[in-house]
Amino acid sequence: MPFCTQCGNPVTGYDQFCWRCGRRQPGTTAPPRGQDPLAGVSARTASVLSYIPGIGWIACIIWLASDRFRQNRTVRFHAFQGLYLFVAWLMNAWVVRPIFAFSPHLEIDKLVHLALIIMAIFMMIKASHDEAYSLPLFGELAQRSVAEG
Image (cartoon, rainbow, N blue to C red):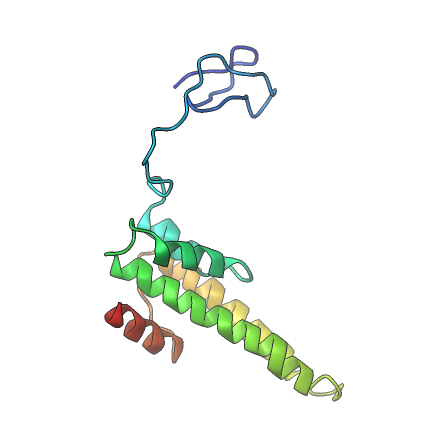
């Protein structure tokens, strides 16, 4: 692994600048054409990233569209389940919250929001242990989606 010519920080052969000191690095090369940008992402990491609240849906779409994970049923399961969890999140924000907005004593939307966060954290832990745990309703839908694709 090469090092920065100014500060000695480890850099890759593709880095044009040092991330620590900002000095331009001599002899940098572009990554080879056709190299898979997801080559460094493991199946476990992809599965865990599928459940990040709020932005995990972006990772889910990337995993489902990539050639790297096209045949990996576990990653596809977690990606679909993460998408369905995100849809539930949206339904809570767009449907449940406005319905109960005028009743100050009923905070059902906050309970649903808390339940969805707990499910997301639970699934990140399960995915980090390489377990394809099937959540009620979401898991069934994810299994069907994987089977169809």
